[in-house]
Structures are given as structure tokens and as C-alpha cells.
Image (cartoon, rainbow, N blue to C red; front, side, top):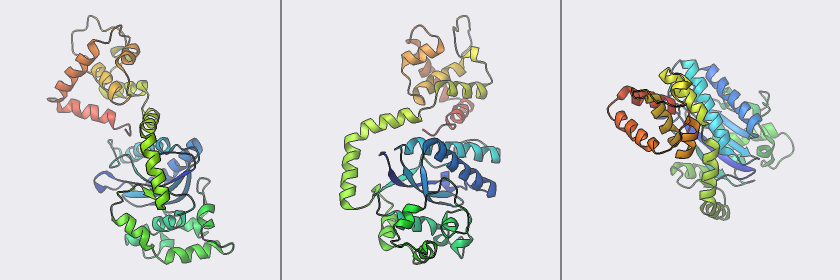
Length: 316
């Protein structure tokens, strides 16, 4: 559920709990992606903590565009991670997990929950020594990046002086029982707040679910020509092999079949749209061609791997 000025606790983990940050340059790459997401989508990060195989973010979305911003964060970081590691394929276990948070209610407690992650995981003996969270910034030991917003968390302390010292004391008190209980249950309810807020959020989700899903889907769909270019690279063919009349060609044009298939699956295109892009006068052959490809995928492991490699470029 997305709306302007919404708050979320966003999390994601490496597929199979694998490491996603292998060293300083990986952490720095992720922080650079947060900076880009702030400048491009206007999102505000209020707290963050990057662990070796997962991350936590407390996010505000003034423009109500969490899905678009997170697609950039996860997708671009995956590309940069894979480039550094000289590998390919998906990095995260899924899209991401987001808990909608009531305004002016749990931001302070959540920032403490996020910042205490290294200590709770027994990765450090003191939180101040952990470099890859916003906690040192809150204590005044590091400069705040442009995309980190601290005022709302500080504001919930209820004090006007010695904010950094009071925040340190608050974090050192430990995670409060309510939040610990909320997350220990596996968090089946994706809303954190009062009963009234949860009831409102649930009703909004039910009444707007179809409309929101359609908007988000359109926002995260990849461009068809971007997909075509990835197919060209993977199969080492030219654009002329994909687009235009194929009359006179006897061999199976597998890359063209893959483009038709992914045009439907990744881009959500209708048959007429695929036909127009590929220079086809009629749409009748497209379902038959896609069917032939699916049968071929059942017996050709190399082809399966090639299609998976193209699809791995996108977070859908």
C-alpha cells in the first residue's frame, strides 16, 4: 500500500541467507544507491543498518512511490554487486518486505530496533564501532549524508537539548517488549501502529488493492526494447534477427521466440503490442510460437539458463 508521506520499515535478505555485502566497497556501493534513490525518487531514509546478509531501512516516501524506489535500490545494487563479484543472477531472496508504520508513533522505537541489529546479532561489542549503520551519525560521530533525515526520530525523544546523548541512552536501554513481540511472531500483519491505524490501513488496502497493484505493476515493468537488448546480448544476435519480416528463414529463431515470451511475461504486453514492436501484421502466430518455446524449454537446460539469465536482470 502506497500513499504520500508514508513510513515503512523495509527489509531484504540475500537468497538462501547468502552474503550480500562482502567488504567495504559493497557497503559503499549500497549507500551510493540510497543516495541515487533519494535524488531520483525523493525518498527519505530515517535510519539504516546494513548487515552482511541483509539490510534494514526506515523510509519515508513523500511522493508515495516505495515500489519504484525499491526496484531501483534492489535492482541497481544487484547489478553492482554482481559486477564486483564477476558473477550474474539474482541476489535477494525476493522483492523486499515492507511494514507500513503509523506516522508519529513508532519511528523512534524502530530506529532503535534497526540500530541495535549488530549488537543483537552479536557482531560487535559496542554499537558505536559498527560503521555500516546510521547510529554513528545519530551520535554525531559521522557526518550525515544528504539523504538521511534525523529530525523526526529526534523529535520523538521529547527533549530539546543534548539530543545525541539522550538518543544514545535511549538505544542502550534495549528493544522494547512490544516491538520484540511484534517481530518475533514472524510479522504476519504488515502494519505497525494503533488498532485504529491498522483498521484504516487494512480497509484502504482492500478497497484500493486492484488499482494500486496495476499502478505498481506498470511502474516496475521493464521496457520492451531493454529486454530485447538483453536477449541480443545473451544470444549474440543482431536486432535484424528479432525485428522485421522473417520470411525465407527455415531455422528456428529461438531469440525471437524468447523476446515474444518475455514481452508477455516481463513487460505485460498484449499480442497486438508485441506484433507491432516486432513488425508482424497479424498476432495469430505469437501464441503458437510461445507454446513451441515452452516445449523446448522442457528439454533444453542451456536454453532454460539463458532465459533465466535475461529475467534475472529485472526485479519482478
